[in-house]
Amino acid sequence: MSKSKLGIIGGSGVYNLPELSGAKWHDIATPWGAPSDALLEGEIDGLPLVFLPRHGRGHAVGPSDINYRANIDALKRVGCTHLVSLSACGSLREDLPPGTFVLVDQFIDRTFKREKSFFGPGCVGHVSMAHPVSPTLVERLEKAAQEAKIPHSRGGTYLAMEGPQFSTLAESRLYRQWGCDVIGMTNMPEAKLAREAELPYATVAMVTDFDSWHPAHGEVDVRQIIAQITDNVEKARKLILTLISDFPREAEPCAGGSDKALEFAILTAPEN
Ligand code: ADE
Image 1 (cartoon, rainbow, N blue to C red):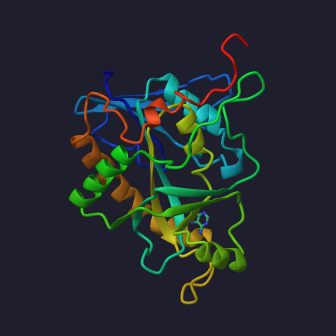
Image 2 (cartoon, rainbow, N blue to C red; image 1 turned 90 degrees about the vertical axis):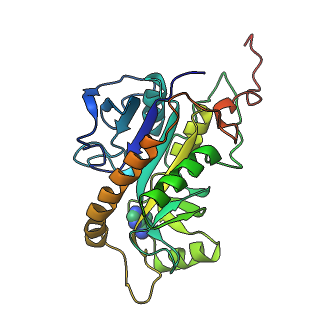
Image 3 (spheres, rainbow, N blue to C red; image 1 turned 180 degrees about the horizontal axis):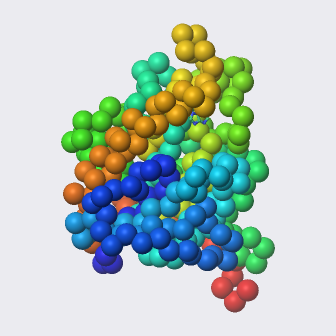
């Protein structure tokens, strides 16, 4: 059994943790190009942690320009055993108001401008995405959210849109009819690539707004999102610290098998 190393993607400012000891930024090169930023490595209570600001410090990398392959590869390369993704999202449900943390368990991928696989010519592989998040990791996040008294909801479908513009009213209504719960621009292809990298992955979708469908809230804009983000970041820090306090120091197997996702995934003959 290997030692756990927890990777945390996203969440502007979540990594400003006074508890993080030996914190150091490292530039990591990958065959896929440069990640969004350097990686911040340190530890809390003996648990090694790696933070990657998804949009870079200063938020200069937009959702369509993120090098998702480089981000996942860099986290795998430094030895992460699990990934927790934190991201802002819009709510498509009345009962998931701003401030709610949704522990998503499904995705609909409507992005179309991004590199989505580590496989390519010369090596053909197909991983299962039926259950895209690690149930073991979600269980731990739910327990942490309960303990930290953070309003949360377990389960939910995240609609990943290309952006950078927000949805039209018709799109927002359509996604509600599809049964989606939250909407965001960054969790795909992140979740697909984590699966290909055999990294157990879970996402905390932090609601900042009601997108455009809610008659009483009008249309979403960046001001609404920023107004909610400070509060969400504070709660995200609490969630991460609570998660860490009970996180196994030896990497535990994923009940969904995401740590062995490539076992039956590769079609290309080994001698190729
Ligand atoms: N991120 C935060 N709110 C969002 C929304 N309404 N749509 C897409 N991405 C978002």
